[in-house]
Image (cartoon, rainbow, N blue to C red; front, side, top):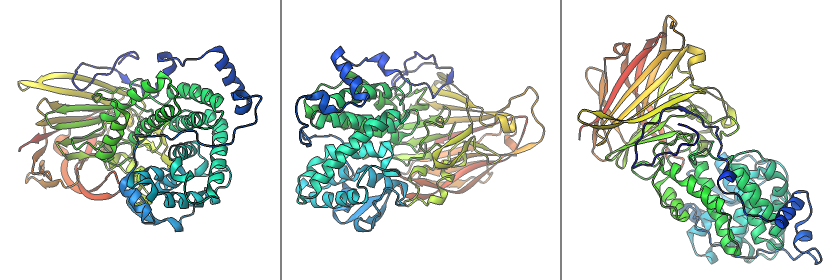
Amino acid sequence: MGRGAVPTRDDEAAPVPGQVETSRALALTDVIAPRTNPGEALIRLAYRMGVPGHALAAPFRRPTPLRVLATVESPVTGDRMAGTALRAGHFLVHGVKLPIGQLDYESAGRLSPGLERAVHCFSWLYDLAASAPRADCVTVAERITSHWIAANPEPGKGPAWEVEHAGLRLMAWLIHAPLVLSGQDPALKPKLLAAIAETAAWLDRKAPRDGAGLGQIVGLAAVTAAGLLLPEGKPRRLFGEASLIRALGDLVGEDGGVLSRCPEAQMQAIAVLTDLLACYDAAGHEPPEALFVMRELLVPPLLSLRHGDGALGNWQGQGAVRADRVAALIEATGVRTRPLKDVQHWGFQRLRGGKTVVQFDAAPPPRARHARMGCASTLAFEMSDGLSRLIVNCGGAALAGGQVPARIGKGLRATAAHSTLVLDNANSTAVLLHGKLGKGAENVEVERQVVRKNGGEATRVEASHDGYAARFGLTHRRVLSLRGDGSELAGEDILLPVARKGKRGKIGLAIRFHLGRGVEAHLSEDGRGASLLLPDGGLWQFRLRGDGTGASEMALRCEDSLWVDGDGRPHATEQLVIEGLTSRGGGQFSWLLKKMG
């Protein structure tokens, strides 16, 4: 696809050949330039150089006493169940309950990643607000806030002072100010207002230098919100919104998918922009048009990862984010659109026929500077039939430390934890610590077209990657063809030698198909197929075709697997594995999933 091409939507079809390029950022300022005038530009420059905001906004008056100027009515809602647990005295994060009074709130404290994020980002305020009327939540909100401020009296180091966490915390304080600033503890209000001012000033300095990514966007959005809702904030607002608009282009690719390729990051970006637009509304200011444009760009790629049950697929370390969470976020935006099915730079191809949905990872993994919980998932796919998931990826690496044991987190990022081909039990891209990725799949070529098949139409996507080229001298190509009525998915995995003469000898190969929760697999007597019974009674048949080079030497087995849901709970499942030795000179392996009833 050319750089200026427009991605097709779910009701369109067009051949799309070309090489996918996930690091291509969108220059948002080329689309919608921020409105400004010479006076505002001068104020922005002075603020960036360190001139205090009150000296620019009201140079001949004393600084106005600090307060939150407006009440924000944000449409972004939290998790009611987690909020109810808070009112009962517990944090509920990824299915694990922890008493409020027993947590270490210091930034240097050792918490699981999910709990660490909830505590230091104050995302729990959204959950609490969703659980009951405000009067019933104030005491709990004050209690936790007092614990946190006592443990973190000033800006410092550690997880609490990562730009992303600090930005989300400031946004939560400003948006849910009535929960934490108008309660029963008179000593808390001045302390929290001081913390709000210190955090905003800290983000003024840190957020513009945080580098591209969600963290910088969150930090600059919080700076802008503080400029809207704190006294004499016009210089901060002008500075924040101009920096934010410039940075937003570095967050996403041309089709609106975040460059981390992480569904949770996509959702967080949408939520932050929605919150910020609510702050503009509360303050009575007209938002820059670029913020609306960006939010509208972000929604369709997210919809492309919804299965028939409305929940998301398991991609880039996330669990299957619940359908109600996705639906509530989309409703909060007010954006009405169709999912993108051919998202070249976001990279997740969507095929749909009848009630069957296929999601195909046809792009390189995120670059190291963008990866959040990077996974070696290139050319993996997921498949659902109506409300039931048939083929999945394990997911859940980003949720490790809760009900998912931390020790298996890295394994859940491996190629073998995804429904794709694995050579010699090696990852197609090196999986490193702290969510980062190393060398591996760099070039992915993809072509999509509608073809005639057995008297009907089928959507055919062909993609290849070079993740195994350096080590094994082989390129992996996968072809998926979904019939128009969704009754049949034909697949072909091809290994092609990089050099004209392939290497000699054999190499271990496994093609994995992780099965959805509740799918019962029964191998056929000939060992070349399996019946797959879905929880809703649907029946699919899997067959390993014997017409490919080396396919006759492969065996089909059923092994244990696991699948992580959107609440961080792991579920015991099964997987089908085509396994054996294949020639280093290449091979071809065909398989078929056919609906029988």
